[in-house]
Amino acid sequence: MPAKLPREPGPATGRAERRAKAMPLADVRRFLEALARVNPDPRSELSYADPYTLLVAVVLSAQTTDAAVNRATATLFAQAATPAAMVELGADGVAPHIRGLGLWQGKARNVVELSRQLLERHGGVVPADRAALEALPGVGRKTANVVLNVAFGEATMAVDTHVFRLGNRTGIAPGKTPRDVEDALVRRVPADMLRLAHHWLILHGRYTCKARLPECWRCVAAPWCRYPAKTPAPLRKSVP
Image (cartoon, rainbow, N blue to C red; front, side, top):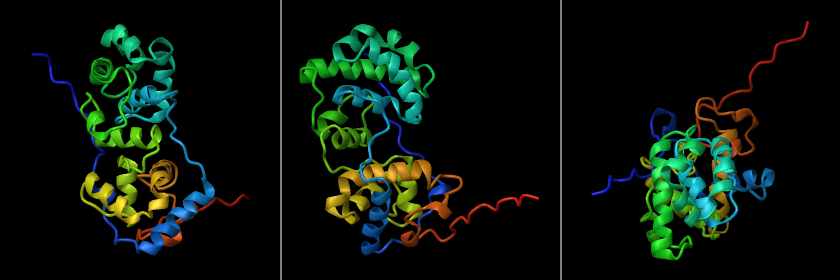
């Protein structure tokens, strides 16, 4: 029997994601409206050309920064940007492109095998179906949510480390597990904002509401955040 392929890693949980009190529903909209005013057209920071290259990029992004993935896929996609080309390249051919990424051995096997399954089961086309996506190697719920949201415009909520942290820290959607946070966000975020909320929260967590030191002093949504220990602005040294 072939070796079992690794599944998609989930976001880490721990002390950095202590749960705040739930944000009132009226403030959830205000919180997201504040993020929307400074970023009205949020986009994924992964480089991709179509649903297939997006799928591969998201699989490669597990426990890795988007910037690192983009550096890897710049050369990988130049050589293999279709399922057939990826299968022909093989795991040994994929490896040199992605060796700088975390978990690269398993990811190399996954992107080749998911490409083979796309050819065999879906005619080489990425399916716009959650169950079919999650049946592919290396594709878990988070990756499926990203692909459904970004490639197919569905109002899904992918919970990565940043979204899990924000859901709990701000009180927008407290939960013990990523699925708890996802379900709470889908339930609490206004329907007209849900598709873009995925991007607003990820980008806000990446650049402002950081894990070790949230930059509360420059957060546009701070008035509605339930985080009790907001970080003050750093003191500036006076110039003699």
